[in-house]
Image 1 (cartoon, rainbow, N blue to C red):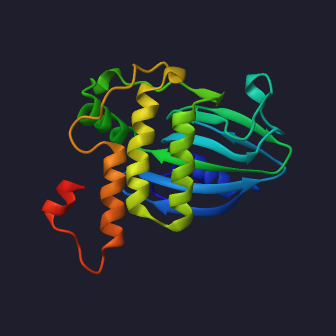
Image 2 (image 1 turned 135 degrees about the horizontal axis):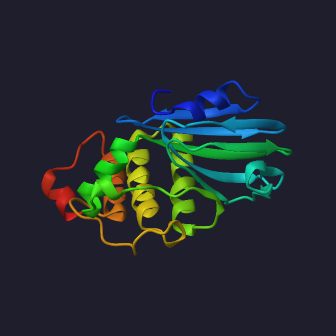
Length: 208
């Protein structure tokens, strides 16, 4: 998977099982994983990795951070270049979003009007953020369905939340600039998907 670097590669040679993957393009990829009993160490990761525990995880521990334990809905952010050590003691399912650093910086400029030189993701281990968690769950669903269109929009929402979430030390959420809001974009995509036999006109999409 080109969008993943050492995180995907390391899991591929561990006991984790790949349940699905989706290439979205431009250095972005999604993967669904499950694991039971394992020990996984990531070193000098090449991409930003956002992870959400979909089910289980109470016996998943980060041993290099005091053996803190996870839970269903726990959010993890592993920035590019980070290192972490994990011990798995029970069955759980999780979704990964892999982001190229250049693409995230481009998003910060084009969408949030941020200076990319000041972008630095903080590491998160087992955080709670309903907005990000909701986006990651929808992204997992898009991966299961192989729906690149929907995944593209969910990644926009996750990136927006990632750079504005208070749990991550981001600035207060601001309207997305330059283009459609996530909710409107989803409606337009659904309209186009439901009308493949007769694609809607630009006027109809504008009305939507």
